[in-house]
Length: 376
Ligand SMILES: Cc1ncc(COP(=O)(O)O)c(C=O)c1O
Image (cartoon, rainbow, N blue to C red; front, side, top):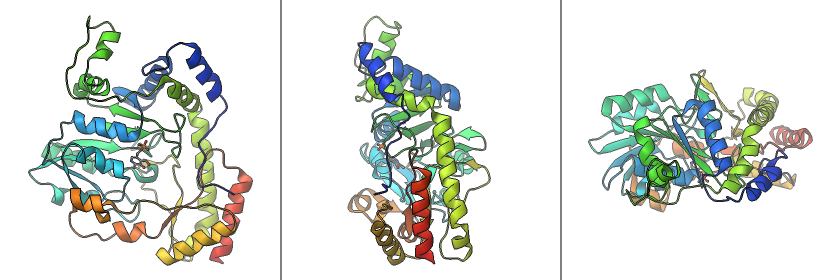
């Protein structure tokens, strides 16, 4: 069976995890956590990076940090993972869904302004497949209406927009290190990027159960106390050790993924040229990270037929995101602004192909051959 995904393994993970075990400190904010955070701060140019247990936790931290209150409205696409919305619903917000662009499947930046009301507090762009949203337009709207921008860059680490790393353009950015992502912290993990320096102190407090324990550990205060709301949003250092192995190999992983992505694109161009499928398109200012290779079929039936065809050949291909506004909780906690021209229609014809660091050339060729025979 060729799986849809396998967590990346580069070979040094065990050695670093053993080293973490030998250090006598396995909880959060140990040596490997510091290394990972500093590496990301330097590489991406964020004011402060904090490792968390998941991107879900990072989004929850972000919602607390920008002080979302009951009745506030938060604008985001409906074509996203539940955590993008849940984090804000947990604070009492109403979600306002805006349609996506058919080319990138990202929120349509030209539809956002009409969805802004007196209650709007934040915009949450989701960089689908590691391809950037139109951040210049979104940041200009945020400036004009005094809104906060939280980038859901769960899939966007190592991608850029006009040369800037995704996750560092909004006031706050959130990465995922879940095993389905390009880099993993041993299965689950995330990072919160605090790009607005005025938010750093409170971010550390929220992450440390609402206390100023981080300042205490740095010797800045002589005892720590309960200061604010918060939760336990630290990643165990054992997991950070696994992640460190992957960040050290970040370029190698990125290059390999880009190669695999390009192989699919090259092989399927003729099928797309016949109009049989659509392939991902890259806006000129976006450098992507090959997080995902998807194709768009004619419709749901065509997609189901291809999934079955691949399954016969022992290949797993999957789709995702039932649009949130069509789900029971989405109806309860949100509303769709304007017309759903693309969200549902595009979500019903998208199929993701196997793409992971340790996918062999041979296995990828098997997938390509099977696809080509289906389309012939
Ligand atoms: C767009 C998006 N946001 C948030 C998440 C949540 O990430 P995590 O599993 O690290 O909590 C995911 C995970 O798939 C995602 O794709």
